[in-house]
Image (tube, rainbow, N blue to C red; front, side):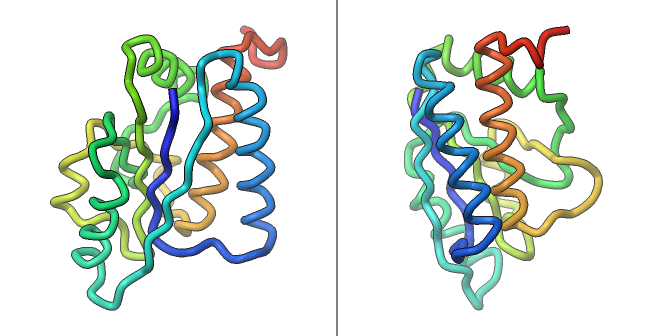
Length: 155
């Protein structure tokens, strides 16, 4: 199952970009035997028109992908095992290309957020959207490790 990340803003060279690349490479390696991956990243420009202008670009990047998961502070807080179970369920149900949507500095336009099948939060705090990419990449790798039965993740 391919995955897509549709995100506002371009991640410049630096520690965040290095972490995203590292975790995505780990995910691709671990997930390959599990029918997970690869992950494609679709970055759209942050617009002066704010969330509405960004929503239009995100919609293009999302295309017909389904299911859609919005990363949003109002979303559901999940444990890593529950997130892994969600990915496994999508894979087992034949989801072609789930997409994770990350808004810009002001978040995701409410109309676009309403399109999401699920909203996911990394906690009650608001995180910079570039760090959300790092956290998502790490959780994708962790989910693949959990689904692979990595001893570190066994109960």
